[in-house]
Image (tube, rainbow, N blue to C red):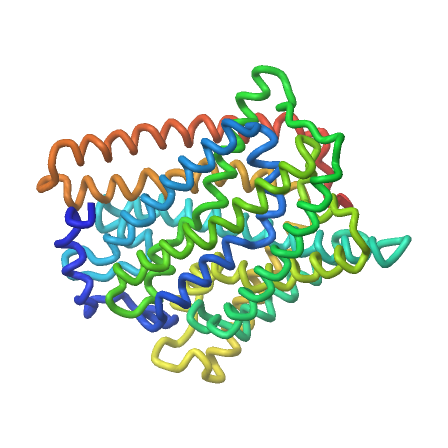
Length: 436
């Protein structure tokens, strides 16, 4: 398979034709990017995956789907990494590549899909950070504050981090800190879940719901498995890598789908094994251990979320900075610092307000994940292959990529229907500025 893309990889050394950007291009090592992927994908979201992925599917189908989707996402990202260079041009943004291949309409479709997922995902991060802080407050106080206070605190923390660490490359030191925090709280959480799972005699693994409900819930679980395995931002992340960018990106992908996958799948499987179908949407709520363990894990989740969310949201910062900062000046110049302050403030103020007003926004994240993340991850890379390599590729290769386009387009449709059904079923439970 590697041989199929040798011509594309030969272009890996040509990077003179790079579009302007306010952020650093071609600077980072594959180890830095690999660790960033590992720690960012092992963010606070993994604490909900036992409930989202395995409860609706059960053991057999859950494990099968996790393995298949994990393999497919690894392959799709591996494939897309080869198209970072096409005809001697380096594409640092996914939307630019789709526009190059299929015209301006696909440029805007990709732009909308990516930014929709990024913005809603960032709101989800703000909610997770707020819920982690509220858990700490609930442990320490008999009269905890409303969730909205902690959402505002989280939004302020995200803003400060994005202001002082303006680019993805600038995360270098913080990735090391995030790695230590991630693996520390994950190991502690696993140890306590295994201990409690051994003594939990009341757990059961029956899949809840009616026959129709099980089908739709299972489709929603597949969408969650996709979300836990990919970012939809591979070219933007790859843009930070030094040459050879294709080989280095693939090394980072190998690290993500080995070390990283073991941890976020491990937490999901152990959580489901320990507590069964009754497992909470937020695993630390299940822990019966001492208070200090719960406080430690929730604070670690909050701190780790500040760093991990930055990778996901940086493409929006890059777009804003490139359009509104003075590119002829340093990103740290007085004028650019002032402009960056107001850009970050406006972005996080808006996201924090929506997250506080709509704490049920997570259901809409599932909707736009199904609608946008599945095509961006699976459909678009095969479309790019058919456009760039279709005339010279073997027939079976073209048929394979046509099959992927059809299969994952259908999957996007049915999982989107499932997400809409979930919203409709829960609409009566939605309350603005709810303390939950």
